[in-house]
Image 1 (cartoon, helix red, strand yellow):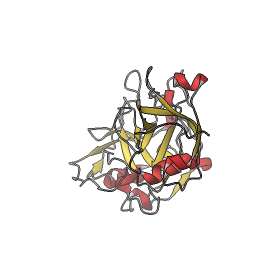
Image 2 (image 1 turned 180 degrees about the horizontal axis):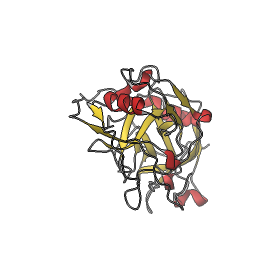
Image 3 (image 1 turned 90 degrees about the vertical axis):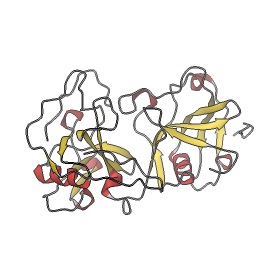
Image 4 (image 1 turned 120 degrees about the horizontal axis):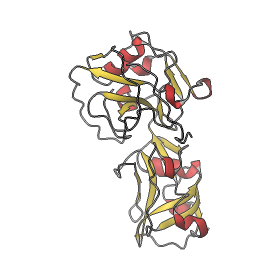
Length: 274
């Protein structure tokens, strides 16, 4: 962002990320944004070096199953932030002074920043997530792929051994474990609460998942208990970190998860910045 105005995105672990809670630096420290449009998401993400962005489907109280809303006492920087999307500085956008319910942080904004789907590699676009919603460290977890509007689980329908093999291979592993996996349950919930927006229909010959046939969005009819879980095998290839902004590269048997009942599916520019 331009000097004098800083913005960042924090994920459920409190780490800087390409998706998460929007925070803008003010005279009182970093503050959240109560409501924004896709133009504002685009402006923020483009100034951070991404291709664009969008408002997340998840609310701040249920972001990947975690509450990432601002804490009590944290400033609220803006309300109803609206941009065209091509602004060089958020000061060129319009917003209101926060008031009312906005000060309680229940409406804090969450956005996703993404790279171009035509230029992102498979290693930049897939990850495994463990039962706590964190990056998997052992090659076992829920498979997610980065779509233009954020990370999406993969639907089990049509996901065969070919898709599993290609997913693991594209993530740097030697093979996929084809032995049956136990269903996720209790504290070992790998299902998550997000509806899958993607089907992968690989035949196993593809070099990475970007080359697989797929269905996206409204063509996918699955529920969270149908999210794909993978266990990949073999020593993972070492990946050199990118210097340009891209989603973190994370690790990659095919079994439907167990859905847990009760889980949520789910103008004034007189503000001083430092």
